[in-house]
Length: 181
Ligand SMILES: Cc1cc2nc3c(=O)[nH]c(=O)nc-3n(C[C@H](O)[C@H](O)[C@H](O)COP(=O)(O)O)c2cc1C
Image 1 (cartoon, protein in one colour):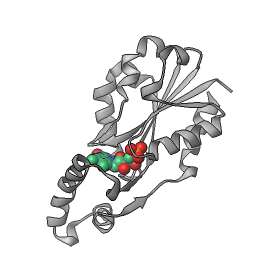
Image 2 (cartoon, rainbow, N blue to C red):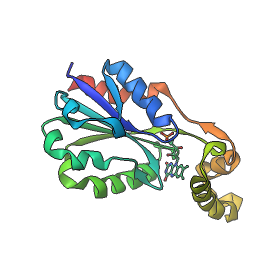
Image 3 (cartoon, rainbow, N blue to C red):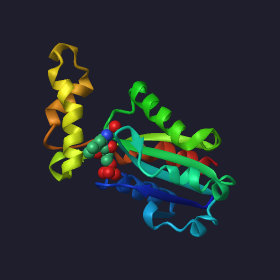
Image 4 (cartoon, rainbow, N blue to C red):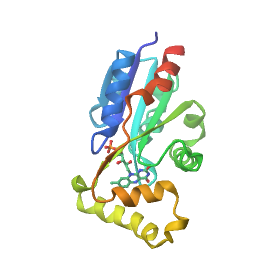
């Protein structure tokens, strides 16, 4: 199996947990983006980057673009960790659009992307995050209940509390992909 490293950025721990599960399965290191030294990545054949989704963007993923001179000779894998359901292609299309803008064509073209579902505890958010989530929820609340999607209704039902969609088994396709390289 090729030598891999998992790099992640996580504010509340969900992305970190996925990074840890993936690293356990691949028997490799997992490192927080803020502490990573690009020289330590030079020996890896596969770089897996995991970023939490905030306001549609994948945290810290520009790391791949900024370090592409070093990374372009490697297999690149990105996993995203958000609350929206990745089984809905509308959700993943949005994420991929934003990724394409951030990563630019050369990096995007070389990157295999996976989407994982995270968790949220509204009580642990800071003030800015609470305000942002209130802005997301407000128009959904105003909608006629009959016209809400199942995901919107679920968001209203769990708003203010803790909800987790974390699933260890969901890392399997990514792990299998890296093993197949
Ligand atoms: C302010 C805020 C904005 C968010 N925006 C999105 C979003 O645009 N799309 C999404 O799927 N999830 C969104 N989320 C949910 C997070 O992606 C989810 O909680 C994720 O598990 C966080 O990962 P972390 O624990 O590694 O930070 C948002 C959460 C907060 C608090």
